[in-house]
Image (cartoon, rainbow, N blue to C red; front, side, top):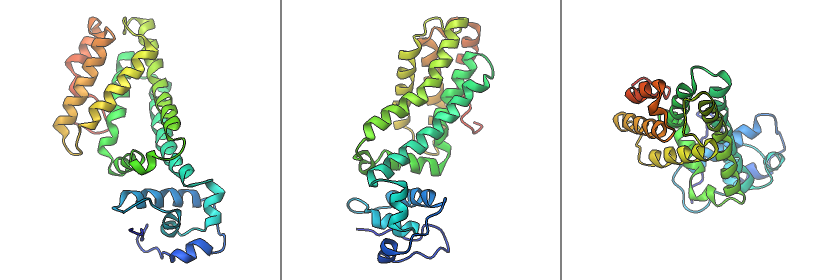
Length: 239
């Protein structure tokens, strides 16, 4: 079993024993340190489940500090999932709240945001960890994952409702179509490799074109415009 060390350069890491028995010095940063340490330990090669003690050793906090923030290792793993899911949902919600452009433009922005993690190495690592077998075995993982999907799809539902109301998406069934489009994106991202910009561009273009066709948007002026320019979807990086 690999014991993780050196979470941050220059930081002194206590022994395993001291991580367990050191005096309680918990502060507002402890939760973040524990989460960072969990990501660090879980992302590195290791044999068997990572014990809480190894995470505490990496974080440099006491067991009392750990249990102040998390009831168990499972709860810590669910916190990793909720943190990334909530951050993504917030970014997607802003597309709706800001209301830039028409519903077709907002759909384009929503799809681009879903693919945006491909350009962020740390975010890719986080998503790999929370989708790992070890984290997926946490009690409550499936339910938390389902809530996360619903949270990210609520903004897409609203975009599709707007499009149906103004005629941009004449065939839209917002609640069902949001789930379907989200699933198509997830399936498409499985085949992507970091750094393969041409493959990413093609995937973005295909998902957008597929969505516009399914929603009936290719019959509208705005939809036709985006179908022609599908390869320019913004993921936070210029192509």
